[in-house]
Image (cartoon, rainbow, N blue to C red; front, side, top):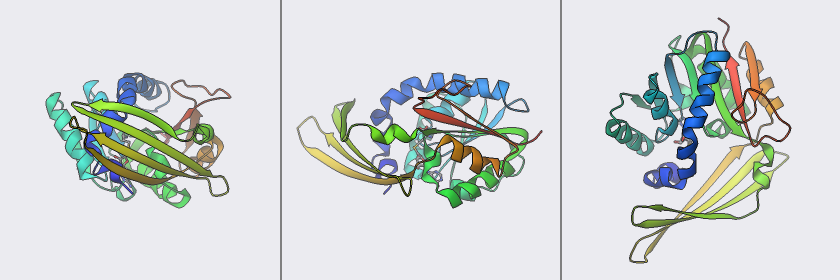
Length: 251
Ligand code: SAH
């Protein structure tokens, strides 16, 4: 189920090359939320499900004191290597976001790139409670998640990338179960070596689909103030492709 974050961890940044190129814009937006929405000055940040550290290291680069946490050691190994290469000091911890046990420690908690959709309704409540506990008063939780029609993209979606000498061909198939609000995600990743030989990996994931209203209601039963914004602006349009949950702990 987690091949993308284990066997394919070394290929994650190449598969999502476009996203790594856009991360500065994302963190610009996150900093705007820190300034405009948070009830305290943000300096210490916990980045949950940090993966290979794409957003984590951008935050560190901008001077935040960042802790990254992820379930998979393979992803963290890459994140640590990148931090070292860029001369950044970030603490990376291996663990389950659902079992964090921080109290009053962070000015902000982040969870980027749809990672929050790994959690179903009951898990997400547990997540909200632990995140709120980890936050200092006035602290903010930020998580982005895709719009419902994300799954309505043409099936299959095929694209290719490169990593050094190797070619990567990615074929995605998404199937939505509207009644259960589950997105079944099947991905075939083919790694093609210069000699023409191929290694193939199957990724089989199940994600949860949430509407902005559902996210607002669920987060609202735990946090003191909840906003859902559209993509990269503190506002909401009728046709957003991605939403940003901003949940506040009272100052
Ligand atoms: N936030 C990163 C990575 C997103 S990929 C980015 O923006 O690039 C999703 C990540 O969630 C993977 O690295 C995976 O290992 C992690 N993950 C999945 N379930 C998790 C859990 N229960 N606790 C912590 N991390 C988890």
